[in-house]
Image (cartoon, helix red, strand yellow):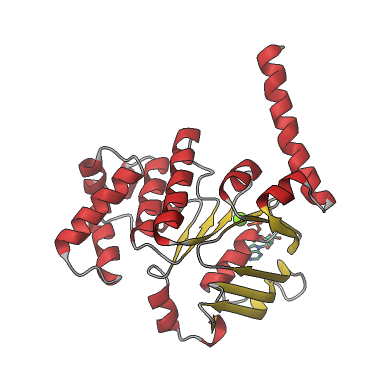
Length: 266
Ligand SMILES: Nc1ncnc2c1ncn2[C@@H]1O[C@H](COP(=O)(O)OP(=O)(O)O)[C@@H](O)[C@H]1O
Ligand SMILES: [Mg+2]
């Protein structure tokens, strides 16, 4: 059974234009699918739809099934229970979703408690273990800090640590590393791959970095103006793109590399 099954799914914010237009995508257990595409192509809207995070004025059509259950028919309570434990989400600025007036350690502890980690010592160990995995070495200071006392990159890593703590079956990540510097980015990518390897977590990753997508994913989907215009095995999409738009995305990467070459040698 597919963990996530999307059929002819469309979203409109204004009732006139489709931000997501008839998208169909199935994600199997343990599979990593990257979604690339330019800004405004509907990537975030798609992920928000999966988590039931669309604003109240938005209208969605089509079918969205998680673990075989139609999302629109689930109760709010059942959905809440699923989010955080079976399904986790990482945003580009996860730090923004933290409580500004509670220390990191207290928030993290509460997050683990409400998601069923009953043993206080286990919660304590889990926090430290996850922060270490994300290379937050000064862990006691981090846990005793308020969100504003950390850099944006550190807050983001704490958010990623939290999202990964409960070994979700599905991780939805919306440009999770774009605000991080390159070494930390690589660390987060490795951590995602480890999560899949160790726990069979399926991942849907939205990224504008087609290099990251190629490195990490089993399949790559390309979105343009709300439509999923290309979807296939990563190597195939990179080596033999079918759609002109995918080719233009790949050409842009080559151009950036060329510029670097020129800068280095010129
Ligand atoms: N909350 C919103 N209200 C109205 N329009 C929105 C909202 N969020 C996104 N949009 C519009 O929907 C389209 C898709 O946006 P988005 O899903 O954010 O794309 P991406 O994540 O690929 O950059 C864009 O035209 C954007 O302006
Ligand atoms: Mg977006």
